[in-house]
Image (tube, rainbow, N blue to C red; front, side, top):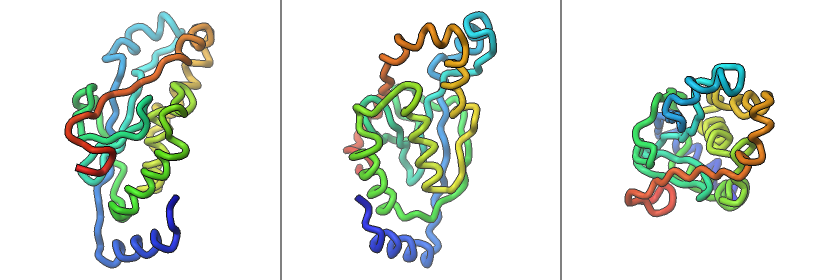
Length: 181
């Protein structure tokens, strides 16, 4: 767990040093365009993509899947380069404090067995981490997608099958855990 006194001390040092790190959201369409083509027929409405997201900060991409919290070099998951990026601004959170935060998440809220395609996934992880680092939300078209799909008769019919799916984009490219090269 995070040590509040230590964390505030690290945060104050970073603020005094003026350290600032760029934070981006990498957005991947798992359907590679098929959602846009098939959703009107299947769902009765257009869904632009089936989104996987990762947070890029401190020169790494961090994401959550069936393997838990993972990191890799930006754009080096099995999904390749992102379909789009969203600039979330900058953070003054020191890297060490961020690593403690990720470790805490990985041991509690974002353990591998807690993954759920609709309710606790890469996008909920990205939303939480974006809020921690920048105080900003990720786009609602990403976070609202599960409820949008499940609100359709086809989504309800497919729910039992979709509930059994786990997404684990490999980030194995020389990283040892998260935040450690």
